[in-house]
Length: 216
Image (cartoon, rainbow, N blue to C red; front, side):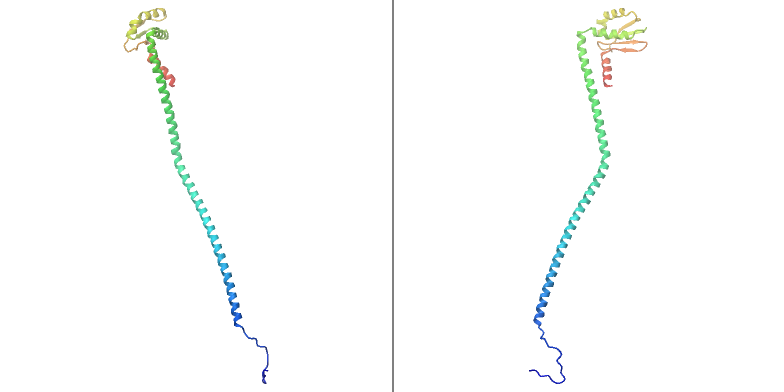
């Protein structure tokens, strides 16, 4: 039984201090703090990764938009530069096409007149009245003229002279007509010279007029 000496006062009951409990609690608290810190770090890493992913996606999208805008701008500049050249090329193609069509038409008309000339030349031998018809037409056009000179190819002059004189007698309204041979006149044709001008009834002249009319 404890002995209390004089002058001593018992103020509180003494409780023994347990260091082992405090250490255990401290360890638990540290583990909890570490777990929470690890969770915070993991969440931060996750958020950082998400932010980085979004930034990369936005960066790629922004980069693609920038590239597309740059391409559109460059294409616009190139088209603005090429458009006059394209228009000029189109105009040149159209002009070349028209020139080709004109050349083709002229060549076709010329070929047709050449074929017609050959056909008529072949018919002259079997139809001697063709030169006489041309002579009659020329004399009819010269009606009213007082000075007339009829030029024939030398061969036609020899073979057609009687028929020509008969035609002149039939056309009494004509003045005096001089008939002469001229080697420059092609066979089958004639040329009539009057005081008013010249009437050319040569085959080549007639076909040339037809060709000019067809071209026009």
